[in-house]
Image (spheres, rainbow, N blue to C red):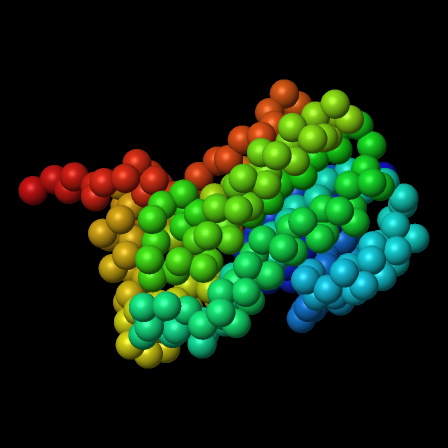
Length: 262
């Protein structure tokens, strides 16, 4: 039985990845590691198994992996390091101050970068040739982003580590890639939009304005967009793809505002 491990897979972007993995038949079962589990949607509930753990805590991750492998088998086929993001006060710090506090900087890096290393270090020794890893970075890690400097630096680190790990694991037949989502209205953007827009009631307006201003294709991205790309990268259809970072962003990283028709 092929199965995947998805961190932060209980909601939002992570749930989009879980759905796509199952819909595209990349795997048959998914183990979700999340700090705040919620019941999976009814249509996939029999194929999704939840394990509570903090992806930044080495002991909790080890305990979760012991439970996962005991239930689903000793050799995971796919790992999606998706846990990440931030909290409302972290985003407010970036908007209000020129410098993050050292504590907030460290929290961003711990959640968005260190977790990728910690979970990979626990899972990879259990993988066999043919397995695949996909890390969730962000276009913030590909662009200069002063407002989100700590988050962007951590996500840039994910890109660098993805490439290093791909080179490290290539001889073992394990592929490693990353996706860089663009503008997706998940909990992260609710918090960020509130910080930019001046309150929770203006979060969606701030998000829609960013989409109109920044996205050449003129539409927001969705968890389904990201999930389908991750499912492909982790499938046999991408058997010769490793060390790559795919931006799913409607063209934002092209680096200039879209040209709108008059």
